[in-house]
Image (cartoon, rainbow, N blue to C red; front, side, top):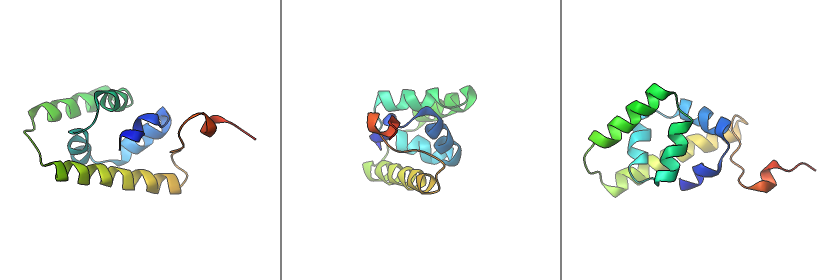
Length: 98
């Protein structure tokens, strides 16, 4: 899940349009500040504010619930990648042409 920080902004924006907000909020409960900020940067301002507010107001959650939602986000990401709608390649090799 933390590897999402390495995908390009356009792909991340496409992914965020497909992930339900409730799923995203739970998945972000265990995410690093770096990943949260990258996601917020790629969301509409109002949507990012809503997710931030939900994160702050939700109480403690079971680790298993958080991990399940993170896996669900990755399932959506892989499906979008398989459809060619997002690029999940990481690093410089993904940006090179032959």
